[in-house]
Structures are given as structure tokens and as C-alpha cells.
Figure (cartoon, rainbow over the protein chains, first blue to last red):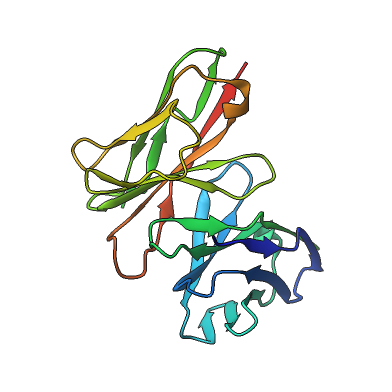
Length: 111
Length: 115
């Protein structure tokens, strides 16, 4: 089945760009997602990309997908302290019934 | 509009008791999902409903766990004879359709603690 791996921590300064990386094993995942989890809050869907796309941009967020290497990244431009959170990468399973999540990357933004 | 709601937000129960966790999806969403999230981990899939039909329950860990969605809207996840290892955040999500982009929107979760 699908396995999703992420680096656990990332620390950046306010105003810098953040890049959070993810690798996945199931090449048949049709959609790949990024979720944000703030302390005490639910999971917020940030963005997603269809597997036939290489890039998707949404305001400060840029998603890059390298399907050959099964590598997904989320770039946050002009990172703010409010971006401090845990970011989860997730792939849709083959049956289309479930998201398979990584363990999450904790982003810490210092001013 | 209203998002996914879950109740209770926090539940403390003694080992051996049964618990029922409720999920109210976004109005009109036909698909509903349950996940479990342990501390320091990502959510893990438990089960999936399309309308009232439970179409995938492959993630339910054992037969103490069950879920229903009798009228295709509100869902209840029931854990019988709870054990300490059942302590986790239980998250519910809904999506507008079983096809398309499968965007799943999550509720705030129920934090279950089994003592």
C-alpha cells in the first residue's frame, strides 16, 4: 500500500521561503494533498494537485510534483509567524476511499 | 457555511466502557470518513461511507470498532470495551462527492482518553 514520508522539522526566519518535502510510494495516487494543523485545531486543506500536473500555484503556496521520483513539495513564500504549524502530505489510495498521510512536518517560524 | 462538526470534543472514559463519537458532515456531502490520529503521527484511515453505505472498513483495527451512518448524514463511531491503546484523536471528514477531486474537509476531532 501507499507509504508517505516527510522530514519531521523545519525552522525558518520570518520573510524567508519554506520548502516542505514529501515522498510517496504509490505511483497510482491520482491526487496529492497538503493539510495544515495548528495547535488545538482541526486539519485544514491547503491545496492539492492532480497527478498529471507538475506545478500548482495558489497565492503564497506553490506545489511541485515530480512523478518520476515520487516527490512532492510545498513552498511557502514570505513565511509568516502565523504559518507555524504541522504540515501533512497525503495521497489518495488506489480505491479513492482514503487519504494516506505522512507523519507531518513541524514548521517553526522565528521573527 | 458550517463545517464538519464532531461531538464530544473531549471524552474521558474508563477501560472497559463503550463510547460513541458523533460526526455531522457538511450539509450535502455524500462521503464521510473516519480517521484516528495518535500523538506525533498523521491521521490513519478507519472507514468510509458513501451515503449510508459503508464501502470501506479496512482500517478498523478490530471488531470492537464499528461505525454507522443510517440516514446518509450523521455518523457514529462506536468503540466497545475500550482499552488504553484506543486513546487518540478521532477525526471525521466529509467530501462532496465520491468522485472528482475527493477534497476531504475535516472536523475538529474528538480527543478520547481511556484511563
